[in-house]
Image (tube, helix red, strand yellow):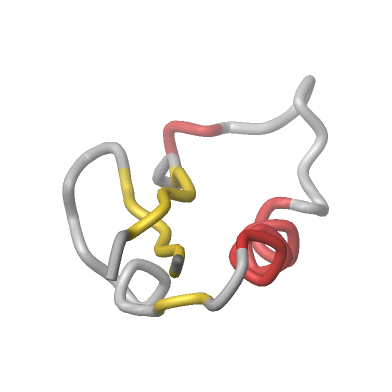
Length: 57
């Protein structure tokens, strides 16, 4: 299995064009992007919402 990151708005960007050999690598990338945000003060409307999905080969 491989994994990719998708955006809920359906757009493509540098993040969604990548493929990952395991879930943890994809998660680590999203953690780098969103890790510094606190839920109480985050303005999620300025950033797209990403989801990790499993892709069958």
